[in-house]
Each structure stands twice: as structure tokens, then as C-alpha cells.
Length: 333
Length: 305
Ligand SMILES: Nc1ncnc2c1ncn2[C@@H]1O[C@H](COP(=O)(O)OP(=O)(O)O)[C@@H](O)[C@H]1O
Ligand SMILES: [Mg+2]
Image (cartoon, rainbow over all chains, first blue to last red; front, side, top):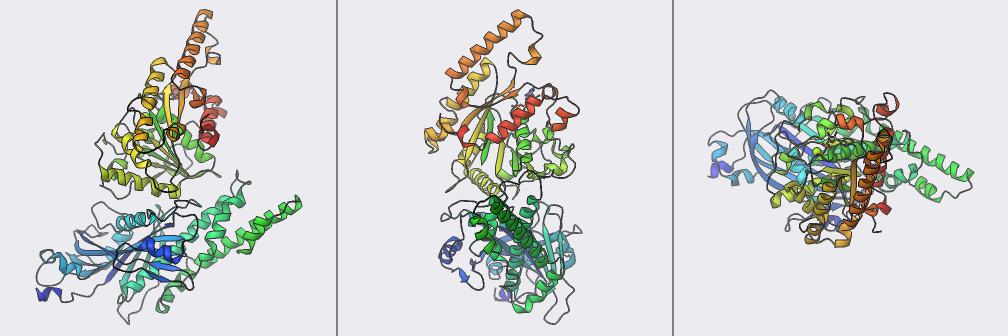
């Protein structure tokens, strides 16, 4: 038995799926409440940070899986091991769940499926590959259209997010309707000194976001944090962009301020790219700032909202009304 | 808001009316999703003219499969993008219109606790995203209807408003059947009370929709012989009286959809162009759909009278 718990081959691929939404609550929850919401496992503790932005992270929940791996070429490759998932609350407002697993080549000796589950559980968040398929093939399979019967990180993350949203302390109020976003990350290992091609970011027809990165895999937790942070910012962009796009469309001249108010009050200040990522990974953010240009898009959204508020203040003044609400919102920008 | 569409009998016009209401409500600017819970005969895809799911979805990823735990997330179809009549994109100013189809060959099934929980999670998730969730149930008391009533009775704090639309045709048998479905011993109201909902709250959340109605003074009937016209008038009055006695009267009615020649011949979405340019459909039909669509969220049509 002892030979079995020896470290296996080094993982060469990290797969992460993140689901993001607005917490089902009328306003931002404080750190104590965030801790309660994320306390899935009684013994383990929720980690919280308050600067520069409140962030609470649940302990990992670990799930055993034995299933096909997503090969784009359609190869028969199985994986056996575990998926690690966690819930995250950002600014007490954004709810996110991420599921991740490292893919490692099979160990020589006793076949993976014959070793007891406990040997796999000793290595949470690692899947041992049975059969052949290279990392590129797997990464493309993972970021491509999902197929039935194949490793489904999305399902695991989505169930965990349901669990966060079902927490009994939440008041169930939905201040603005927003779609859950789906973000998939594939991180290829480059070893500690390898050179990395630049990250590639795409959005497919079904709205699934994909980011493929080459980085060192020795700190998968930090990579998961990076993924979560990017997913949260992408959700902010998606949500706000939809809102301002709607402003330009016909029927709704009336009620425009009412429609943007909850977003201005509750979401705008959450924009803080890179706030929780490790400095060694800041190059990923820099690449995203160049293309697709996250902060440029954000700035244009904020400018659009500022315009809308200014116009509305002017209109109110010329009607002899007191634009106190608009003025208060304007100060948030 | 979750709107559950039901009827005691099949062929009442429930699916056609509900899909048209979903379409109108999305045009009014709301994000709307439509759930085809009529597992025996999923017709929403056909009515909306989404070719790939005209008899439900084929890949085993529909609502039926989701409730059975066979797929983690039920398939969604962007109607604006995939309907045959649509310009492949959302009309300016409209909200989203998303169909969650049933499975081809789905059928009825007994309900277990895991399904109720999945169903509940589905509604909670959709409510984050959509302001109107329309659910087309099957006719009569079905497992699907039971499942949905139980799942929606327990959505937790601050939960979404749940409302029922009960469809019936304007005949004696249909009025009696709709009465039974709602107020009968094992009807929707009693069922709700058993699930812990206040009787009054339950009754306030249910309204009736009359379908394919021909008012005796409608233009279509102007060619009747006098004897026919007066007989029809008498019938209509008797039905009004029966409806009132069976608690389907004015205060409980939220819509009456006129008989429309297009819908009589084909199950479909009626667009403004069918009224204005080709003039095959009647403007009153569209007005009735629009009216019902906007009353869904007007509290005064749902409070006790
Ligand atoms: N307002 C209407 N006028 C004329 N025919 C209608 C009307 N509403 C529905 N129909 C027709 O009645 C039939 C049954 O409608 P359907 O919506 O399929 O009923 P259900 O879902 O209750 O079984 C269909 O052929 C439909 O086109
Ligand atoms: Mg039907």
C-alpha cells in the first residue's frame, strides 16, 4: 500500500470552471454573514479578506469522479480521482462557485482503478488519466461544446452555486436580474522557467467564456483565485454592458434611472481587476487588458452611465424638479 | 414571477395562448423564459416554430431529463435566434425570450423527492435571470403539475410570486371542468392548502382565461339568422351565469381570447405583421394577448375583490 501514496507524475493541465451570479439578497452581506453562507463543512473555516475588497472563500468540497475526459479528437480517455470546488463571495455581492482539477498522467504499477478511493482522496483536486490523449486535445475538448457522459465541472460548480444561493440567511430579494455566466479556464503547465504564449480569450455562441493560459502549475490554488477573479470581472462587464445596451433601445425612456440605480449602487465599486491575484500572475491581467481590453470596456460603460445621469439631472432641473436621487447616484461614479 | 398555465381539458388553447403571451411580454421589454412541462405532448417548439425542437428536444437534455437527473442543466433555446419567423436577432427594445423544451418521447412519470428538489433549484436559478417564468403544464391533474406545485410552494424567503392561469373554452363542460380543477376536493386550492399555503393567498393567485371566445355581438356572427342569434345570446347569458356561480365570474377572469381564424387553422405565434400587413389575424386577438401579458404583473388583477 505504501507505494501507492507516493507522489505520481506531475500534473500538466489544470481545468477550472466558474459560475458567477448576483447573491440572492437585497444588499451586500457583511463578512460574518458571508462566513455563515459559505460554511459548508463545519470543521473547516471560511477565509475572509477585507482589503482592498471584501472576499470570502469557502473550504474546498471534494468530489470523487471516474469518468471520460473531454477529448476534442474523440479519444477514449478516462480520468479517476477528485474535483475540488469552492464558493466565493466578492464584495458581499457577487456569488461564484468554481470547480477545478489537475490532470496528471497515470502512475506506473497498480492500475488507477484498482487502487482504493482513499489513495485518490489523499490528492484532492487531481485526476489520474487512464489512456492516451495529449493536453492540447483535452484542453480543446474541455473548452469546446460539452458532451454527455464526459467530466462535467460545470455541473459540479453549478450545484455548489445553487447551494450558496439557497442559504437560509439570504432574504431572497433579487435587486436586478442578471444571467449566470459560464467561464472555463485551461492552464497548461510550462514548468517553473518555461516561456508562455499569451493567453487566449474567446466567447462562444452559447455565451461560454474560455481562457487558455500557459503558466507554472505549482500553485494551483493561486491559479484558481486568478480564474475566479477574472470570472467575476467578466460577469460585471457582461451584466453592466447588457444594462447600458438596453438604455439605447426604444420603449424605455421612462424608468431608465430606476433600471440603472441598483447596478450603480451595488456593483460599480466592485471593479478592481487583479486585487486578489498574486503579483506573479499579474501578466495574465495585463494580457486581458490589451485584448479584449477589460478596463477599456468598463470605462466606456461607466462613461455611458455618467452621461445618462447628467442628462437626467439636467432634464429634472429644467422641469423644476429636485434631482436628489440622480445626484446621489452620480456621486458613486 | 412564476406563472403556471394549466387547464382541465386538452385542446383548450393553453399552449398557444401561453406562448403568445410569452412572446408579447418579451416584446414589452421583459426577460421571459418558457418552460414546456407538458411532457406527454411538448408543443411549445412547434408553436414557436423552432424546427430543431418541434416535438421536444432529441439529445436527452430537455426538462424531462433534467428532472430525472440525467442532465445537469436543461437545454435552453434562444427563440429570437432560432424561430423560423424571427430575424435571427432580438428585436430592439425586447427582452430575452428563452425556451426550455421538453424531451421528445418524454411522457408522464411518478415524482420523487429528488425531482422536487431539482425542480425547485431550477426555478430559483431562473428567477435570478428572468422576470417572467411561464410554465406550460399538461392538462388535468398530472404528475408534472403536482411536482411544480410542490416545488414552487417552497421557494424560501422572499420567494418569487407564483400565479396560476387556468384556461378553459367558453362552454358548459369546460366551465364545470375548470371549476373542478381549481376548487374541487383534490383541486389546486386544496392542494396548495395542504402544502401549507393560506387558502386566501391560494385563491388570490389563481385566475381564469377564456379561450377561443365568440362574443354574440362579434362581427363574425353578423350573418346568423335571427333565430340563431337569439339562441346564441341566450346560451352566452347562461354561460355567464354558470361561470359566476362556479366562481369563474368577472372578478376571477383575467383574460378572454377571441376566436381567431389563424389559430383555428394553425398553432402559431401571431405577429403584428399578421394583423397589419397580411391581415390574416384579427387585431383583437393580439390586443387580448398583450392585455393578458401586462396583467400578469398588475397586482390589482390578483388581489381579492
Ligand atoms: N383563440 C383561438 N382561436 C382559435 N383557435 C384557437 C385559439 N387558441 C387556440 N386555438 C386552437 O385550439 C387548438 C388547441 O390549442 P392548444 O394551445 O394546443 O391547446 P392545449 O395546449 O390546451 O392542449 C389548436 O389547434 C389551437 O390552434
Ligand atoms: Mg398544449
